Image (cartoon, rainbow, N blue to C red; front, top):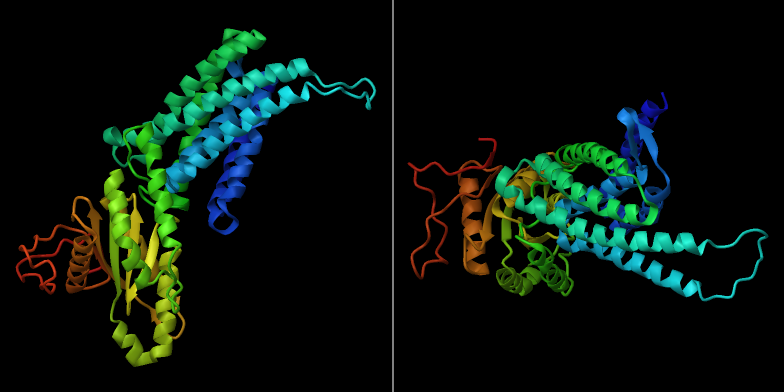
Length: 447
């Protein structure tokens, strides 16, 4: 029956759309995220046009538009994916870009109407009446998209209070609420402009719930299986805070750009860390964002130099640095602090997510087979401001102490547990060995 064929085609459209956009998003570090954003944006006019003129019948008498139920729902969930895997600064670019771009289209159409037209093509003339209808529909749809995009991010963040780390459930709930709101708002415009029947509202809502559920499941699978990263975005409480971190991100990257790289490993150098870390901590404190710091040390590195020579040791350090740099987010920064010790700064990253990142770094290095050397392991200590330390110096000292605890417990592990606070005036004292009766709190790693 045609209705079942239409339903199957809708499912295929969801799969094709998600697969194409997921591939572009996955390749963003190689191709640039601009390609992903362009692909997302060029379909906005198409989905608005289809939502006004193209409808198909499904089983149970449901009538829907693929533009609204597939393309729009998919775009909204993809914007949420950008926020989850990147940050609010990156997610804001397509949200504001689509809003401004579509308003620009409407303004240009108004100017085009003022031209004196030449009948170059017989029996063909621009349908300005249709352009007017589409213009109003695009203006309303663009406004809804702007609201929807911010609302789905805020709902996703707030849902952490109810569902914790059940990420796919949070994505689905946020999508269901926002798509319900959007379907009602968009139908009002269709009713006014095209006198669409109420069946379009009901049928569209039902199918949006189905496609939203499918997109949420696919994104959940992507986040857990294709690109696992834990909670990589901060947890603001509202719209202002969600996008308020943009200034923080921008200043952070400006500071990073002002200094050089380590000549051997290619990651940032100690000079850059010393120059910017205090300012980054101050900015995080001013904006209320968490700042996590991971101190990493290559286990038994002296034995590598002794057994294989310093040239092989240098190549091993370079391989370890590149391996770690490939695992961090674009917002994070890897520094060679000295010798075989590295520091990773993670702005906007809470402690739990930083522990997950440190564990991912440990696993990635352990899986790297380095020519002439073989496999190496790392140990890591994790500390997070503001809960762990009031300033950058103490934050580093605490992470460094936790690194020592990880090494003392057997190496090849991550430590992020609480340490006793040093007495006043002894913050810079040498790292104490853990008492024999006290078992260190190890978050991961083989014994």
